[in-house]
Image 1: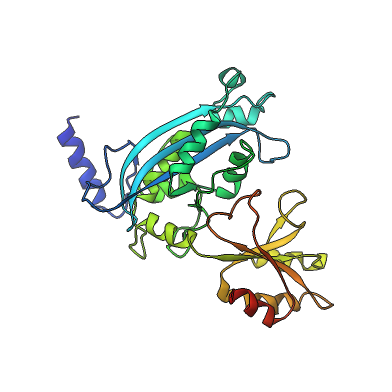
Image 2: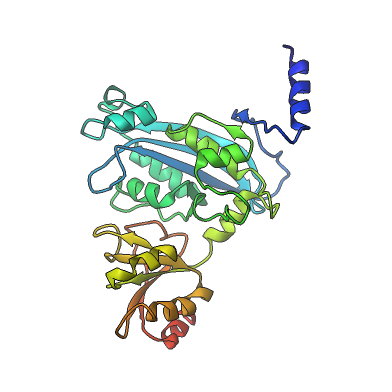
Length: 314
């Protein structure tokens, strides 16, 4: 089949509503031509690990894509792509080898160049991961003091459901935006992530990266339902609270992250769950400390509406 015949077949298929065509991802030479506008530097990161738990698991591969973008969310071009293995000091579980294709022989004796990685992060205006709450804590284990670059999460800080997309899994998002790739290798996932950021959201018609930058820059508040009655756990889960086990956060408790305009309503809701007066901790989060388990965030205690007003007035 000639290229012209193939392109005509593709065009014909796209014209029918009964078919959906997706294409294999290929790294483009550029996304937008340089128009002389101010440019910023982003880095998309992904880690593959021996498991899900920081206390017992370790990085086995780290991938990155450095890219250039504008203030309006347009991506101009990819500047650098790379990945490095890390010897975890123990055997890689069989299920992880099956998922990633990474085995013990591939990582034996390998070490991530921490100095170069630190420099890449320090030079970036934004660090992005597709599940930053997982990737950032693992990456921060590489240093005593981590770079202070702002972070964003393309999985949790974009309004996928409001845009009519049911799942925030990267491979599903790729499918919905018309491409596919071989997943579960760090640099490949990063390339797919940057490609996703270059797209336009289906409902709002905004650049994906623009909306992510706006959302990540907002100050939010993490409310901890400390000592919540155990019989209320299903109600908390239904309200999108998540559980933080010992060692995974400041408190062993249910928590939720909210914007400022929802704080008062959340306090009133929580007051209905407890059988006694409450005084609950609230953390202030921003792009520099969000998703981190190292960075210190300001913590306040609330028990009445005036406490919330005092927090917001600072």
